[in-house]
Length: 126
Image (cartoon, rainbow, N blue to C red; front, side, top):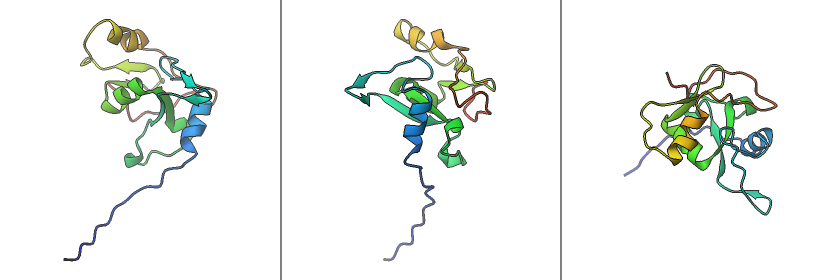
């Protein structure tokens, strides 16, 4: 049996992660998390604001440096950004204590870095 499987994989820019981390000074854009082991960042990731699957470019204005927790929450839609680059927390988020400190305490916080002022976000929550 012969299979013809065609996939449309958009090439990721291998330098994207490093460029975004550098633009955000190697810290989470939301909480400021910046743990390192020696000189290597730990649990610090880069998220596309507009996902690659939706033709989001691998460019600094489309990237966010996020700690692992905020990255997972961002990809899930638990947090997002409004048109003014402020953190929006989904009303579906619940719990207390740590969740309050990790999410609700950052609601409406303005996000930005030296290379980013304002942009339209596909990952906004309304």
